[in-house]
Amino acid sequence: MSEGPGNDREPIVLPVLPNFQRFSQRDDIFNRANWDETVRSEKSERFFRSYGDPSGDVRPVDGFTQRDYALRNAAWHVSDIFTGLKEDEDRREGFLDTFTLQEPPADAKVAVDDTAATTREFKRVAALFGADLIGVTDYDERWVYSHRYSRKQGTAKPADLPTDLPNVIVIAKKMDQSLIATVPSALSGAATGLGYSQDAAVLLALAQYIQNLGYRAVPSQNDTALSIPYAIKAGLGEYARNGLLITKEFGPRVRISKIFTDLPLDHDSPRSLGVQAFCNGCRKCADACPPKAIAFGSPSSEVHNQSNIQGVVKWTTDAERCFGFWANQNAECSICIRGCPYNRDFTKVGNRVWLRLASTQLRRLMLAINNWLGADKRKAPSWWWSKSS
Image (cartoon, rainbow, N blue to C red; front, side, top):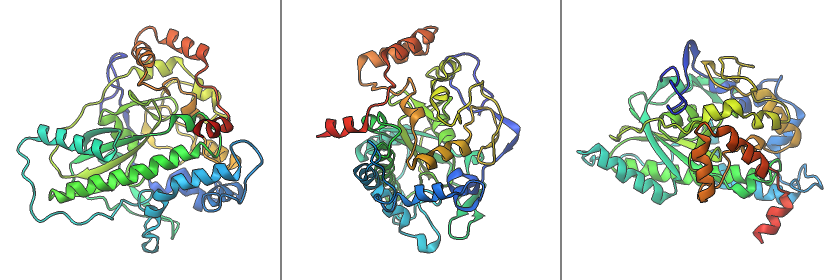
C-alpha cells in the first residue's frame, strides 16, 4: 500500500511503517475479555450472557426491555447457529475461524479465458445472493492475523489460512438505518446481528459457487484477517476518524466479510470520497463518544494498548475504553455510526449531492448543513416499534 495521498481526491490507504507488526487475534478486545483479567469483569460477563438469555438483565428503560433484547438476539440467531456448529472442535466459525461448511471443489475447473468477464459475472451472482457491495483485491499477508485464538484453551493457535490463494473478494452488507437511529439501545444491536446473519448466508453461498466452478474458496467474517484494509484495497470505501469504513452507498453502516480464492479475477482499485479531508475538520464521532475512545487529533501511529495494531498511520480507537462502555450499558454501542455525517440514505438525490460536495472545498459548509439539520439525533426505540407496526 502507498504511503498516503498527494491530494484530497486521491484514494486514502493505510500507510505502513517499518515497525509494523501483524496483529494476533488473541489481542482482539472481545477475546481479551475472556482471558485478560484487566478487561474481564462482572459487567463484561453479563454483557456476553445477555446474548443467551434476553431476560437476564433487562431494565424498565426504553430500548432495554426484554422485547428489545429478544429482537436483538433473534437477529443474531442465524449467525450464532453457524458459529456454534463446530465448537466441540474448538472452532467458532465466522468469528475466530474460517467457515468450513462448504462442499469440496468440483473435480473439473471451469476455464477462465477472460478474467474481466468472469469478474463481472461473479459480481452479478454476488448481487443475486444478496451482497450489497463487492470488490476484489490481492492477498496481502500484512492484514492476516499472525495467530488465531482458541476460546477453549484461552491461548493463541497457528494461523492456518492457505497462502496460495491470490485473490480476496470483499463483501459488504448494509445495516438497517432505522435501528441504528436508536443507538445506544439493546434494540439497535439487531442491526448488527442481522448484518452478520444475512452476511453468513451470502458468504457461504458465494464460496460454494466458487467451489462448484472447481476453484478453492475460504469464506471469512471477523476471523483470519482484518477486514477494513482489504475493503479499502478492494475499492469499497475509505477509512474514517471513527475507525470504520465509509462507503459511497451506505456511509459507515456496513458489515464486511471476505472470501480468499484462486478463482482468476480482476482487481478493483481504491477509490476516493474525500473522507480523510472531511474527517480532519469533523470530530462529531469523537465528541459524541461517551468514553472518549475516538481520536481527536490527526492520524498517527499511536496505540493505546495491545488491542491496537502496531506500525500503521491512522486514527486509532482505544478498544479498552470502547468495550468498557459496551459492557457498562449491556449492549452494543454504535454512536459513532449514528452520529457520522456520512450515515445517510444515499438513494435520495439530496444526500447524493451532499456526498459530492462533501468531497470538495465546500466540506465545511456540508458539515454545517449536517449539524443544522440534526440528522444524527437519536430516536427513541419506542419510535422504531411504533414505526414498524
